[in-house]
Image (cartoon, rainbow, N blue to C red; front, side):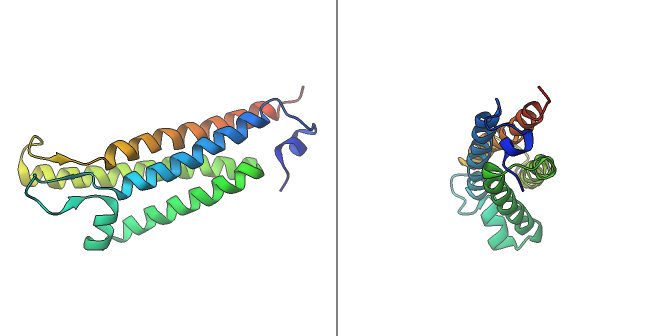
Length: 161
């Protein structure tokens, strides 16, 4: 695999530093999103002991889909580390697609948890909110922005001059 500047045929592509920074934001987003997915999202009320959250669902409910999401986060982090140093168009596109898949999967899981909570409570005002959803959504924004920006900068940097 070649470094971006070798792909373009010049030593300092105009967007090379921006590509590296975008992958950096992407990596931070993967970590923040995974932490937010693991943190408590909400619970049934102030008296409830059990929180809804990705880690809680995996440990106590044993949902195999949650394990796949964590494996997806690990793959995203490894790919981001690889792409921070070396860039490959195919891997960059695959990372953008996998990022979308992981974001959608986490949103489906949180939506299913929310549907379960609403079905039991019949109202949202009794829920006690944790920080997990806000942290996860902030991470999602960084993941998607970083992946898309790096890919776009890469395409722009590879144009013939």
